[in-house]
Image (cartoon, rainbow, N blue to C red):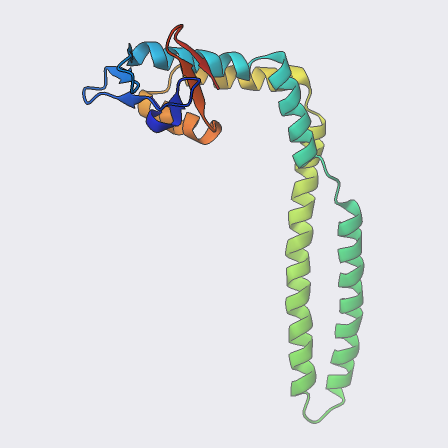
Length: 183
């Protein structure tokens, strides 16, 4: 199924035959594609649904998404208030000048800065919403999600499964003697 990315424990690569019915290694040993594919998918599903993987997936999700940005948001909002005051002062000054162009350009620059800060505040608030949702996750909900994924994997066609597994796995070791996969 995964061609060069799969191999026996000694690291030798497996190759598919041109008909797509067998995998073989350099020793001439071959196994039916269906048997190898079944072993790989079975191992991935067993790993995805194991309590250890569920616990680790929950921990990593909370670590990656669980950060609170409220202090950064408050700092940006304070900066925005300061810029608003500066803009107000500059506009007051501009109204008293015969040629307010330079001051209006500065106001325009400050407004662009405010726009960037507003976008950053929105991004951080969205991240905080994700963090709140991540912090509400528990092992049961992660387990349900991973079980759903495992069930869906069984429905993938061979090419979609190859693409999915290719993004998920670094390598696959296949034991040709017992037809088991180690991912």
